[in-house]
Image (cartoon, rainbow, N blue to C red; front, top):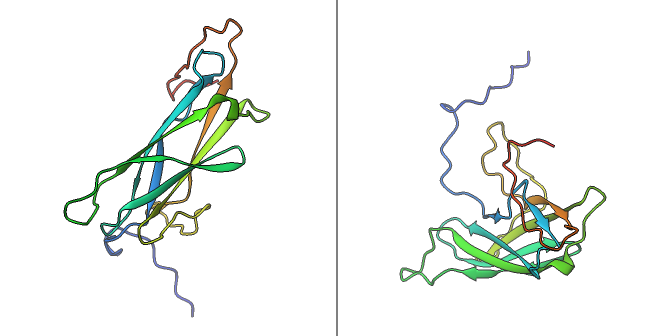
Length: 163
């Protein structure tokens, strides 16, 4: 006779002691709108990356259109030789490189590499009921507009506003 599968429960699952490398795009964020005619030549992308076991982040790359671009890391060398905090990154992207899809959006994705050459998978390979250890590329779709008067600006819409 076959046994029923065990149900996932917090009480029966061991604690997570080491997490995989991860990175996030913090700005722009989901729901933001970028005006291509606001007088600015670039869009600033910013985010963070974190490795596990004290390894330093050595590289963050941002996917735009059809290529990966290296972001500038804003971290300091640890005096203890271990890195236990988020590493900030920044990338200035020329607006001329932003090409909208048929829905008027462009998507940015990021991936990080640490000093142990660990990197993030393109798609999530580990699934679990609670979503722990998810570390695939972080992707953020952004709306692009071209204001007719050239005086537009980059607009933010609250995430609760529906179109």
